[in-house]
Image (cartoon, rainbow, N blue to C red; front, side, top):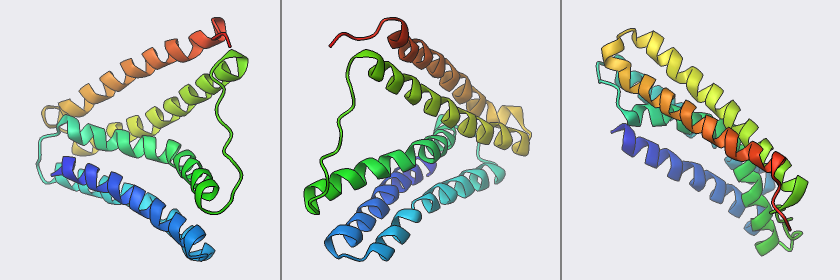
Length: 176
């Protein structure tokens, strides 16, 4: 059930984004568009409540429960950036907006972008990891929440790999 809810929340996130952009640029209703874009965090709250409720009612945690915390951490940190990207591209394609600036793929600027991406990943890890830790402490049953701890360990390993890759561009920048 939680797996389907994660999928529904991801779809809901993009439905709010698309509805907000349509209202803003196609129907010229900027206030309604802004309101719809502001509503995107609602899907995160729904997912968090459902996950905690499911575990509190005795469900044994699975990797999918852990992914819900990852989803929330990533959505909080990267959500604004994804909405901004969609907004810029939508404005360019449908409202005669300015052409979005492409990211640099080489040199110091690319290395800076990679480090910035890792910092965002780290903050999302802090948020998602904190959610996992709070759920583990709240449930207070190690056998029931082992998968959550395993998910946090795997995500930590991925964060370390991301650090190595992201910061390698600082030492060995890509050539243009």
